[in-house]
Image (tube, rainbow, N blue to C red; front, side, top):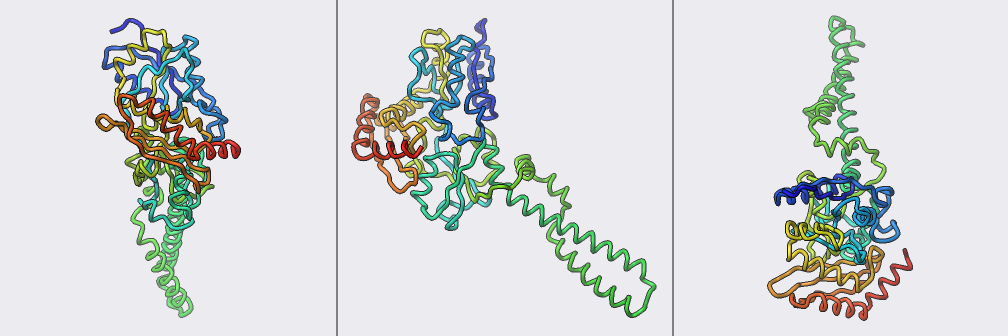
Length: 392
């Protein structure tokens, strides 16, 4: 084992810490001692803002890389999709670990697919790309921004329905308690056989029966029902239902890494029609170009196919020049000696699109990726990106 630990910078969010923890575990399997160092970023300081409102790419990246350049840490762990294409000259992408599923998913309360959502349904997303793709596919849906981390967004989806259920159960429980109280009073006056009292009792009995019928559908008290909910549902119930969404679009990998994928209903969206962001699903480990640690990180963590795929995507993105300003999806997949690459560039409202699927030679993928991007620019992608920049 090396004498000096590898110090890895990471954001302090739950998802970031889980990702960094995966990297730490792999490095430890290769007999490296590892220490995680939490660093606050610009994106963390304005956590309620949409990604597209942060001004430029790198809101979650720059602060970590500055720690690397200043020598305070040895390397930094990023989500690849957050890393700008203009990496500082003194830094290198030391490793791209094995990439997880890059697809987006539709999240609903009841498992409804995108095709089956009612017209006018509200779909929440923090991504310009996802919003444009939903509008292009289902222009009859309403796309609204949603803020917060993965947990927060899911809680916002669940909150209105859980609050409504809580209210129903609370009202039924109150009615049952009232009916029980009337039953008790009726028992206290059971010896009173006066006609007026007897009629009142009969009326109360009917009310009691109605209350029992209303409560019959609930076999738990409100407290028992709350205790039976998952921690995610309990947290959602404690949230003010100030926004009402019928569905969300999120990255599948975010739900998986936070452990939420098994607690929500999802539909995986095809990557050829809902093309992911460049680098989605992948991690990126940056280090100083002149450091010995960069070599150690590459040897322990780098996954060649994932690096080729994400590099292809980032070359296209760099040539297009859209960053987080325009809705752009780029997805590359190594298939034998070819790199199948899907690209979509949208207007912000989803009404216009320029895109193509092209197979690139794996031996010359970077040059062919640049050629693909330039062809798309000439076919109208440049105009869509320029229009998005004006709308920013």
